[in-house]
Image (cartoon, rainbow, N blue to C red; front, side):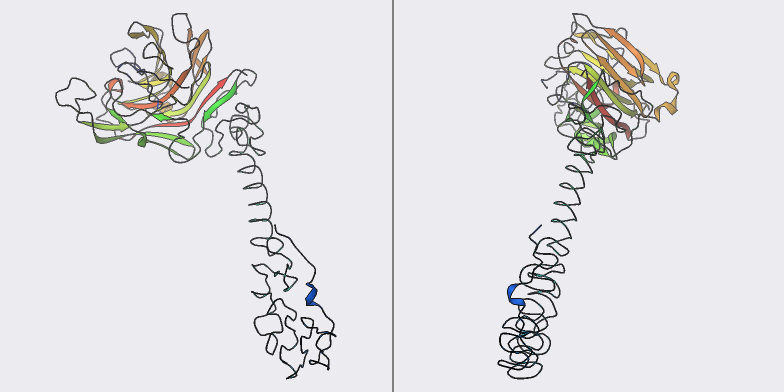
Amino acid sequence: MKVSSLPRARLLVWFAPAVVGLFGCGGTATSSSQGTKDDAAAPSAAGSGGTGGNALGTGGSATSTGGTTSGSGGVSGTGGSATSAGGTTSGSGGVTGTGGGATGTGGTTSGLGSVTGTGGGTSSSGGATLGTGGRTTVTGGSTTGTGGNTTGSGGSMATGGRSGSGGTAASGGTIESGGSVGSGGNAGKGGLDGGNAGSGGNAGTAGSSRDGSVDAATGGAGGTIDAGSVGPEQCTSRAAIDGTKWKLVWSDEFDKDGAPNSSNWGYEKGFVRNSELQWYQPDNATVSGGLLTIAAQKQQVLNPNYKAGSTDWKQNRQYAQYTSTSMTTSGKKSFLYGRFELCGQIDTRQGSWPAFWILGNGLSWPASGEVDIMEYYANGVRSNICKPSGGNCDWSGSVSQSLSSLGGTTWSNKFHLWAMEWDSQKINLYLDDKLVYGYTITTTNPYTGNPFYILVNLAIGANGLDPSGTTFPVTYLVDYVRVYQKP
């Protein structure tokens, strides 16, 4: 975005604080750059004593089918020292009976168990925790049943691991059935649906586009790019990326709802350039359903820098009447050469001035250089390259395409792909895979050897003209921003 007094102004993208200044979309640039399972019965649970009383009968105190602990007779059997079906201890159960610990079918008094059913030391047919096994065996006992303290069909939780039926959580990896997150890697399902995503390990098995058609970020099938599968690909008619020529090194797919990723983006704030009407603030940018939305609003905001009588346009307005967002990668991400892409839909109503552009690190504008890969205002979709000339830019050769030549209002209702291919010798700007403007780099401009950072912004007014007759919000939708470089 260039200064409003120039023939063409450039769209200011939402990037970093380094892109300010009174001149153009430039401004002063900144530097960037399960548990153990035991199916055996407890030793004291068996016994083969009779079913009689303390000394004789069919029980006995130790042998036959009773024993001093369990079997079908306890200290008593079916009789005992007192009663035929009770005894000092229990009926058809000893201290333990066919159950565990203090319960089972015999208890300490009479009948068929003095405490609870046929379960273990605590619950009915469960163990110390839950499931169908107790602390010991089968229907009771002191160690494990068919589940054990942790696993089996009754472990601490499910029928498997600590949580689900498999690993630590679900039936597979750490979380789901694959890698670290999904059914595969950290995010998507292959490529951009890959990158840190994929259907396999930490990375994925495909490449950088959601359909897996492109190589993933810095590591082939893996990489460090933001890979997403939340929203559908919007620029579906785009040409495939030549994997022998370009490798995806960074992207934001805007697939995590909420605020934009703070690792990628910073914000310009307040009144910034070109005497524009909007007050820049982070609040107007949100991510939902796989899309970034910058929504300019008709909203009054107090200007904390107001000074009555000032001749500085940033100070002589007590209030801003509009708000919007300008995002930048300044200080976070910068790139020397490559292919830069944005898939987006722009609002072309009067007052709207969206942009996707780059500025050079460490230099003030216009020495920093400026490439407007896309900006729109006053019925023109523009592609501009600044050739620094003294304290301003020479914009000669820049291209503006009218909406009518592109398809009129229906064109504005669709997503389009803007791209720049840049090396040490040339800069080519594209719209929907068609070359719009080619520029040969000379030794007198800043496009050789110096990294550039990205801006995505939506300005209101100035070159965008009077917005007073436009119904707000004015919106700028972005599906993704990507940077490729040579392998």
